[in-house]
Image (cartoon, rainbow, N blue to C red; front, side):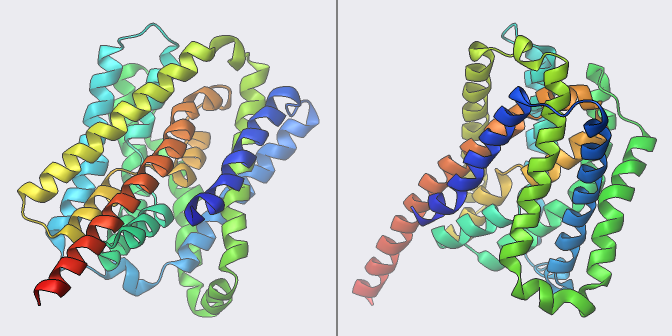
Length: 329
């Protein structure tokens, strides 16, 4: 419940932002203003991510290579394969941009904060989760735009070296600059984690408002009805169930400990809203970003709710196992 109290305000703010853009979209001279503000906010977001992540966290956990290898496979192989198959199958007649949005969702890196938080709550291997989630986020800056060019190009989406370069310039350069500045500002960042978190959320909300303003001007709500929204929810639930089930099966089949299984499940089943929306803002035409990120936004909220329930279940199992071990000792 404590986790939900932390997450719910941002979820509500996200909905309010979409409604605000729907009824009061940025128009005229305000379009350029919000686009410039959004670009600056994204750069600041990744600068702060670089400043927060220690050198030790980047290189830690290399000895647990089997766990990290599978998490990377789940994030950058299993997810994309499912996305490609689903976009190819296209079982329901909805907007093609929704299928493209699911494909884009599937090639994104994992979250960092929530994956670690759920792993800790469930009693998993937190050190491995920090390394796996951080590595996924870092690799995603390189791999996700490349996968967009390789995979989404097949379905008519745009992806080029120029766009990869834009990603690197807008995301990687601020990240590296922030990390290099860590000796100077690291202590300040550590003392103001709460405000840094607000910066993350503000950046995401700015991108969403700008993207949906443009989408509303191009008639997004005439293209997406209640049926399409329900379709996105159902597909998100099915996709999440498949990924969690496969991760559990692989973890047990390969003989990982319960703590490592928890880490694999929560790090291998997440997709990052914080990374995905800024990337979409760079990779795709602004008019299509609103529709493109709908599956990501809905999947993000569902993964938090489902994983919160799963984490509590793991927590109870861990407590029962610890109690049984104590009684048998």
